[in-house]
Length: 94
Image (spheres, rainbow, N blue to C red):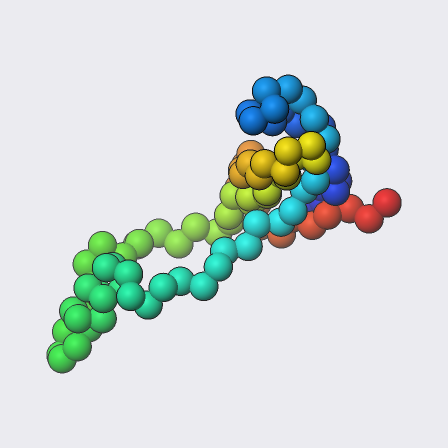
């Protein structure tokens, strides 16, 4: 899915429509010290199998997320792009 680099969108901080620059959202590294990770590692030690609560259904596509940054006040808003898509989000070059 292709998207333009600049978009006119509503800024909740300015309380009006302004120009926003579009950036692709990328998830950062996960913490190895989070409670869920520690619990899973503790359960995996010894002769045990998988940890309960793992997803049985693997979703084929993701909902793409973008970050919109206001040109006036530099406030950043996340926006999820509608439907699930297999194609990665990319910015158009004009």
